[in-house]
Amino acid sequence: MEIIALSGINIVYAVASLFLLAAGLSIIFGMMGVINLAHGEFLMLGGFAFVLSVNAGINIWISMFVVAPLVVMVIGMVMERLIVRHLYGRTVETILATWGVSLLLIGVTSVTLGYQQLGVSAPLGSVEIGDYRVGGYTFFIIGLAFAVLAFLYAILRWSSFGLKARGTMQSASTAATLGVNVGYVYSATFGLGAAISGLAGAAFAPIAGVTPVSGLTYIGKAFITVIAGGPLPLIGTSTASLLLGFINAAVTAISTPVLGEIALLAAAILLLRLLPAGITGRFFRGGL
Amino acid sequence: MKTELTSPAFIAALVIGGAIVFAAPLFLETYDLFNFTVFAIMAMLAISLNFVWGIGGILSLGQALFFGLGGYAYAITAINLGSGWGLLAAIAVPCLFALIVGYVAFYGRISDVYFGVVSLTISLILYNFVNSTSDAFYTIGAARLGGYNGIPSVPPIQAPWAAQPLGFEAMYMLCALTALVFYLGVRLFVRAPFGRVIVAVRENDLRAELLGYDPRYHRLVVFAIGAAMSGLAGAFFAAWGAFIGPDTFSVSFAAQAIIWVLFGGLGTLIGPVVGALSVSWFTTWLGEVRLLDPNIALGLLFIISVLLVPNGMVPALRRVLERLRIVKERADT
Image (cartoon, rainbow over all chains, first blue to last red; front, side, top):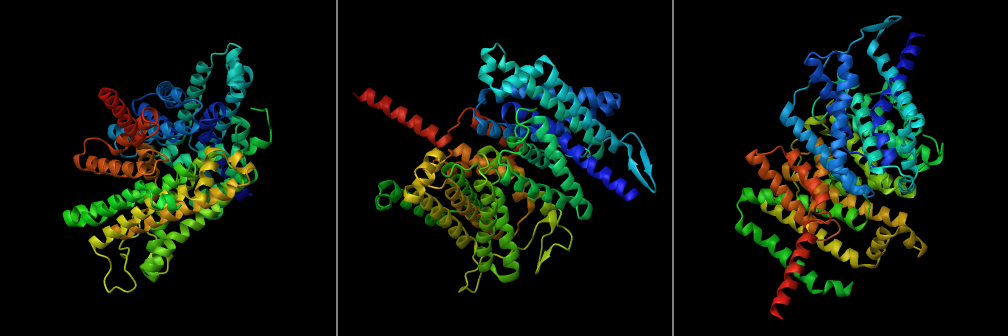
């Protein structure tokens, strides 16, 4: 009984963390069709912002929910203004330019912060299930994933910004003729995606620690989840996280985490053979 | 085909390239020759990436993974069976892997951008996998994969009829000649009927398909050939340094290959070679003087290439020369 509960928690945790890691990327991809190759570095910067501000004496929750998202949002918006803006509509060039930003951010952080790993111990103690103990932080990550999903859904579905953003997503030129400032929407969307990435990076910092290259450990999973999910940011990423997170956790449970990752990749590639535009390229059309 | 073989540009490339290959050992010290060998290997990788991306139009962001696969295939096979089989494996394994990935991707008609990201992700995950193989469990015959330590003492290349493995000079000749053959081969390929179809598929795959050419099949062939070329380069690299490690699967190595091609001039024939040589030389120099973190330099170069010289250095220089010629002609008349 306890084993079943534990594996259940592990699977839900894998799904939730996959969603958290990919959410910021999927917002930017869904809105602009741009794969932001600097996504891993957004996560890394979020982690650093969080750890450094906790070490500076700021409350841990304020660091996670305010400082980290704000810092990464500002960096994301600056990057959008300086580089991505000049390349809209040229997807391949955007990918390459964001790759350059990724290398640049890795280089700058390794020069300024060094290569040693920084960390904060995970708060929230642990919960006992029979003879086993599960970190309370595991449940926090699961809750956070649901909160982020609900927050993004609410913003995109009900706010005036969400309406404009969805309009721009469907047809940027039509939105522009109706008086929407498309440049502003892109900038704000990029900022929103970056802020969510910063939050996710902060949330994983107590578990994995932060180094200048720690973004690289996350991005493989994040990319493949977003690609498998297809063009709709929320439904796509959450269904893909469900499917791939389940496979990842199941294979990890019977072998090693690396084989779990390989199984995730193999499943995603098979999925793309059947649904080349991702899950939401065929299903749930017109959703969020 | 015949016209290309006898065209002045082709003969000039053959003569100049041949002269560089054969004359270099006469003038260079052993240490420089050693470095030039690795430049030739990097040029091979650049030519293969350009073949896939610039000529075939396939956004293979993770092309360097075939270089790593080739290196590992060579190392493992050469340790067990000797270097001849190693070279064969270094061509066959990446080619086979590319056929599987390419079949799924091209026959599933995955879009360009998706394919690029998927190929990069495969590279990332291979990197994590190889890094996790330090356990003695991951041993193939006499070769231990060695995880993040890589495989040391990879055997050098030895011709079946020779008593000794290739020395520095012979190794340089082999790598430089192969790079030259790659370059000339790609040159001939784009003029050949099959190459023309490839270019047509790159320019407009729907139109090519309506004319009766299957873009999926043509892409698959280009991708597999490119993977075999990268794999051979990887084998030479492993034999050159007697070492192959997981860094060949790393994102920054994949990025370097992309920068060479982008900086030199995507789709031009000589551009990627120029890019590979100049950027590798630049990063080696940076490593020596410790002026700037290599990631910062590569990142800046990447961004500048995309924003300011989107067609690459070689076409940009060509345009400058053309303009100078026009100015001079006007001045003359």
